[in-house]
Structures are given as structure tokens and as C-alpha cells.
Length: 288
Ligand code: ADP
Ligand code: MG
Image 1 (tube, helix red, strand yellow):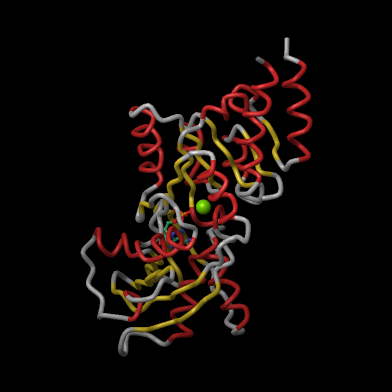
Image 2: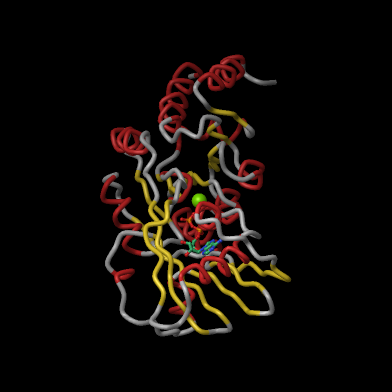
């Protein structure tokens, strides 16, 4: 039988922007000691606006690089892909079809466009394969950077800026007031991660984190005795959402994240996590 107070709590929580998929996890939310946040789409809007398009000397024409990049990115639903496709559309560049494509989880994607092998990848891919690029402003800004490679040769890069959600700072603040640690985990680069973490005054961050490493981090904290909640929106976050003691998905995120999570923030408002914490405590008090 469902205790009446919990049944009522679940109904009330719907009015607080929470959709409870797993009642046990919801009840356990009062035990949370650490909340891990994904960055893109969770603490930020995922609104990615292109800040710069840079090509390496004589490697390629800017429009041509964008055209080829869009050719592969049309296969992705990532915020980065959407930003590149918006830019190409705005510039009136027709998107060529791609013959095949392949996701590189947490790194980008590759595909065949007009017989060429095109990759659009993050700095982590460049490091992994030790691909050298000319020194650039990309190493100084607090932007997300993706490089374009054509037939294995780096031809340039695109930088983009995202916006922190208005409610994110308030959400972190409430966690702090309640003694709950917060941690940012992102596949994005170090400078962007640090910038978001600093602006929101978070307890810490980890950058260049691959999808399976998000899950490992949750496990690691659990092994240390932490009761861990994870908040995310992407396909990439699903393993970590499943691993967490309380998995929380952002409503505007992917179906995979929502289906894996215990609780969904229906209004995509991170501040509703605060009502979850406070509400869990209040409910528990009523029951004992
Ligand atoms: P986050 O953890 O911030 O939600 P993701 O794991 O989704 O980030 O992505 C991590 C990184 O992988 C991005 O910063 C980018 O470098 C690269 N990446 C992911 N998807 C794409 C894509 N469609 N095109 C290019 N790069 C991508
Ligand atoms: Mg995300």
C-alpha cells in the first residue's frame, strides 16, 4: 500500500514541476548528499550560437568547411549540430547529403560527404589522435570548440557560446544551503567547464568526461558512501542517470534520458531540484 502522505506528495510534486517515475527514488531524495550535473542542456540552455568560424591557412574556404561540416552534422541532434545547421541555413549554404555517418560518443561524429571523409570533433579527439593544429584563439576563449577534418587533415574550427539557464544559480544556492555537494561533469573542454562552475560557484567540475566516465564517477562517489543524484538531458547521460541513486532528467532533453530517470523536471527548470530536496525532507518529517 502507498502511504497516503506519499501519494499526496506525489500529486503535489507535479505542481512543483516534478514528474515522479520511481516513487522509491523520490522518497529517497531526502538522503541525497551529492548532486552531479551535466552541463550542456542541463545547467545551460544548449542555445549554442556560433562565435567564430576559422580556417587554417589555405586549407579550405570557410563556406566550404561549414557546408561539409553541416553534411555530417545533419545526422546528429546534438546542440552543436543544431547550431551549425542554423548557421548554414542563415548563410544560405545548401546542405549536401551524407552517404554514411558514425557517432564518436562524447567526441563528435564522422561521415562521408561527396566521397570525402569528414569529421567534426572536439579537442579531446584531437588530443587522443595527437593531431596538431596551428596555435589559435580557440585555446583562449571560453567557447565550445569543434574542429573539422577532411580526409584526415584538420582544415579549421568553429567556436560557439551557450547561455547558463537563469535558474541554475538559484538551484546551486539551495543545495549549498542544505549541505548537499554539487559537481559539474561535462564532455566539453576545460575552459568552458571552469567558466560555468565559477559563475555558478559550484563545488567542483570535471571536463572532457566521456559518457561512460560519467557513470564511473557516480559509482566512485557511491563507493565513498555518498548518496548520489545525477541530473542530465542527453543520450550520453543515460548510463549515469541509471547508476545514480536518484536520476533526474531535464524535460526538454532526450527521450532516452527521460525514460532512464526516476524524476523528470517537466519545466526544464533546475531550480525545481530545490523543491525536490526540501519537499523530500518535509514529507519524511510528516511520516515519522
Ligand atoms: P555534455 O557533457 O556537456 O552534455 P556531450 O557529452 O554531449 O557534452 O559532448 C561532449 C563533446 O563531444 C562536445 O563538447 C563536443 O566536443 C563533442 N561533440 C558531441 N556531439 C558533437 C557533434 N554533433 N558534433 C561535434 N562535436 C560533438
Ligand atoms: Mg547534456
